[in-house]
Amino acid sequence: MSLEIQKDVPIPKIRQTLIPFDKMEIGDSVLVPADDMKETNVRSQASIRSNKDSEKRFTVHRVDDGCRVFRVL
Image 1 (spheres, helix red, strand yellow):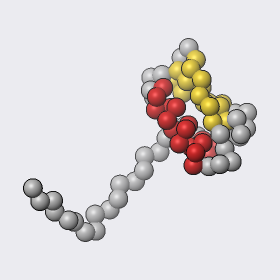
Image 2: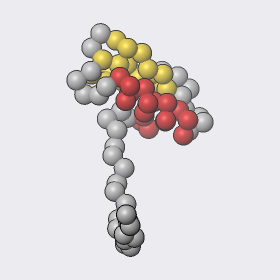
Image 3: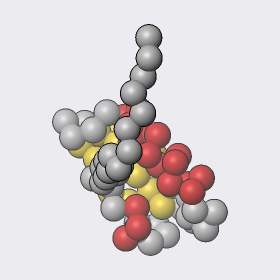
């Protein structure tokens, strides 16, 4: 099997998250309804954002109607 090398194919844009990580201040939280996003996806995104920016940390807690994301640092 041979794969074809292609040139000038644009890289797809990164999908934006529903969670407004960049706008959150320490002590802020946001509810992510279970209908909008799976808990594992919420936790994954919070972890990635915490690791990308050493000055910001996020934690996720399960609540009755979804997940709540807190900015803790």
